[in-house]
Length: 146
Image (cartoon, rainbow, N blue to C red; front, side, top):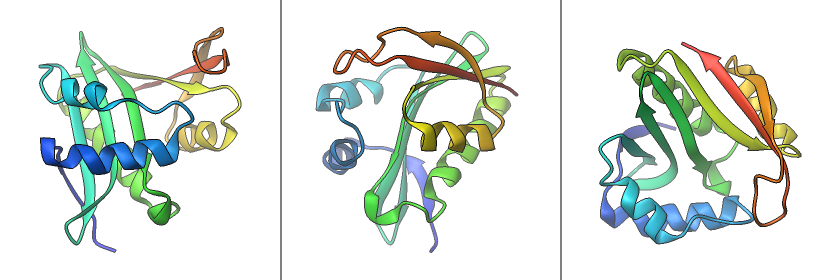
């Protein structure tokens, strides 16, 4: 499958929201993605194949650090390398832009996603107690040096 990466556009938001709802127990709302399109430090990219958006990544570059805010792949395209494709491009871009470190949070019980990040060299860096408002679940802080 050939996958292409490009910046998201307003017209992509409906598909991004669909993927978001299929991926997270408490999905971001449309306004959250909309504002990411206009922040000068934010990036919202989509992965597409044959003109269809199949995944997205949202991240911020601030003060020499990159923060991965959100990444998801449509369930029909999971385990096909799309998540790795998005993360690899993000990491290379962040490094080129001068980021020295990448940060992210992941649900403490989301072991599959934690292993995914560990595969890319992320390490546990701390804990945010009761971080997720929907379940009061802890977040594992993870980071990676670039």
